[in-house]
Image 1 (cartoon, helix red, strand yellow):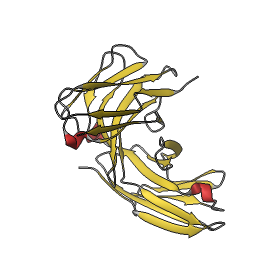
Image 2: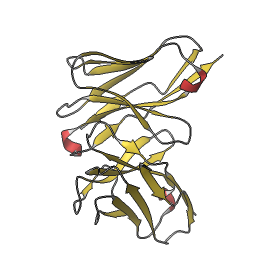
Image 3: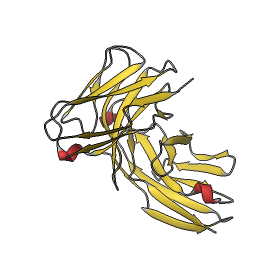
Length: 111
Length: 111
């Protein structure tokens, strides 16, 4: 079956850099997605990695290593507004044309 | 362009009652999804659709039914509500599987 593992909580201070890891186990692999969700709000798409390496989008970057079944989301120059939950997600053959989401990592940014 | 909208935003049901949640999208997306989110459980897929007239089961389909009679609408039905169905329900749509657009959610309480 499929599984995704990510830390449940991460804390950091404003201006710092934080890395949120995600390891996955799937039957077939099509890429790793990342979503952000502020408390009570709708999840929003952040990034997608289909190939190994680093994808950069402003202060956020996402990395994938398919050989290690591992990826991470890197948040730089942290701001208070980055306090949110972050989910990694993958497609799995057993799930059909759908994504399986991790349980999420709650990031708390303090001043 | 409203994106993905969900109706209603809040609902309280008594055990055994039925209801239908409506999801509408104006982006002409083929794929639509229904998720439920419970504390500490991340997003779990209930049912999904890859096009008008098609539906498929997700990870947690029991107790729910869906219909996709029109491309822009995806309905989620609860025939006989149970307290275990108390949750936040999110609808999403997409062109590409990995980049989904979510609605604001429906908060359902079953007493």
